[in-house]
Image (cartoon, rainbow over all chains, first blue to last red; front, side, top):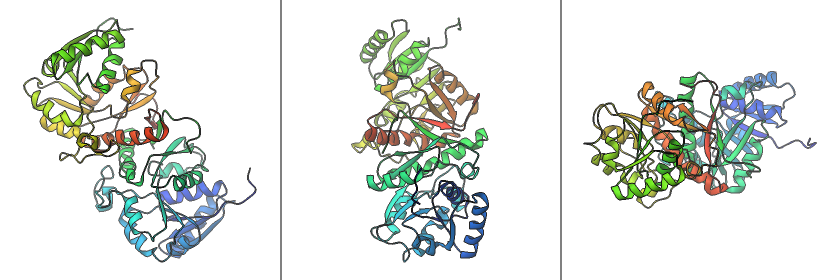
Length: 230
Length: 230
């Protein structure tokens, strides 16, 4: 049991299903959450919904730029359709030294295609697009593509799965992993450099395909790993 | 315990690490194996090596075309560098009705690149290239990309992992799964249409990246699935 309060974490796109699930799961283990949405009013509504789910949680509400300025760690959880626009709008809000955990997935659904298909992203992956767009010195890590939003939001649901983490700095990945692993049942696995996000992002499409077939909320676990991975 | 001998299975590229591991694991559970190699002499050597590993196994040896003609189920386990040439050479040997389980992975290593990177394949994936190249009526299923060759060959190693199966026909996938699941510790998961092989093939590169970091032989398991998947 720790008696110090952890640093706050901003969730950009917290009104969406994945962002909301992450916000309440992290709040439940004592992480103060800064709820970010495109407009501050929507953020306020989401913060109220989150507080209803986790009465003991700490939630503040801002528009995305305000949220990004209120925490040193920022989770980017927006539809791919909005990722580029969001990052453009955050150029003045993000600053060197911040950790950006990008969870964006370039599903073809972004352009009215299938959710089991991926778009080609010029930079290679959504995470690499984020890396290109953030101000210099913002540390980008890619993670959280294989965790079902519905499972996160369903607090009674045991997660028991892995989170695949990619990034160019081992220290940054370790920092992201330490945050994510606060959520019970999630184990983080270092999958290599940020470019590997091309593969990990596509696993969302794969799991959606599996979910359609088996009417479940599939996740992923890497076998052959034991002990402390970080 | 079944008292009927299962149908033989041909392994094209059985002299390679993955092919060899599959051959001996299947032979151990009573499947007669037709060892295929580019030349018959190499096939004979491989069959002897396999028989040394599994003395009770049934192995015959042929060049690849001879092997493909000797079994109704054919596992294609060749380096991507050789996949197209091999399938061209098999055009006269494969026939409508055969089941081809393609395990090819288009790693960039095929063109002296990294084994953690993928090549773009015009058809979308190695499996789709196989589908385009086989004679009409040959049923192509994609599988076995995430099972470590070293773990298969190490008979004392418990596998305990999933095999991700893609294909356009549920019946063909079920047939492939029934064969693969004879190997103890392997569970097959239906991942959707053959085009999903674009994603499942890339998991080899992802697991290689994980193996480099953790000095292990990682595999994959899908969470959230229970009971009979087929």
